[in-house]
Image (tube, rainbow, N blue to C red; front, side, top):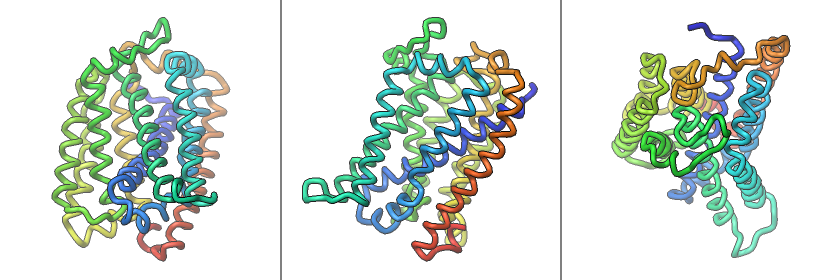
Length: 316
């Protein structure tokens, strides 16, 4: 199996995007269930970096369009209503967090209420991303020739549901580690294990695996994080935001790579629809330059957070 360098970069960008999105999904669960604690541990982290999520998303879409031009019309036509809903909700997310921090508020639209709105719409955004990702892997619900999506068929294929639900449970469990919340480490560990079992079995049953051995890497990383949380000496490393997100990105990368080169339940070979032109080579070099700039910007925002909270040694 040969791997195009451009595909490698594209999967890496998606992995970084999903790791950043996961940060917000974990923040959303903390805000919903532990708002008081979130005011000191979550919201100060979200404020400097919330825009990076959208930047990584646009970066990924632009790279995908140059690499596989034919895949975007498929996604656009197939998920048109969901993409429009995603954009509306994304705007609502931005409005909620901007209003919570910078716009006049009253007792009906106070900071807490606005952050609860931000958390809820972030859950919706995450669910849409996971739904599209799951359907592209399994093919359940997608009619490739008609470029249409049947939500009933997607839901009736239980591995799709299990993957989305299991992923949500994993992130819910990891939130207490990432944001250093006062949660019993045993509960955190058990929550993550339940999520890993549900998502893992579902991912296998989705029928797109080509390199099963690579599943071991995300499995070890995901289980090791809550396991190491039992050790006081290891916690300071787990609370390192850059290290934690780096581990998440590595886990997502190898999970996505287990399906290569297939999509839609092994009915679509990605290599057959690549651009394979001079543009593909040029976008490869452009992506590397843009990726380095985006990473530097991300590190800068992490530094802003660490300086604001006096925890430079923990986050950088």
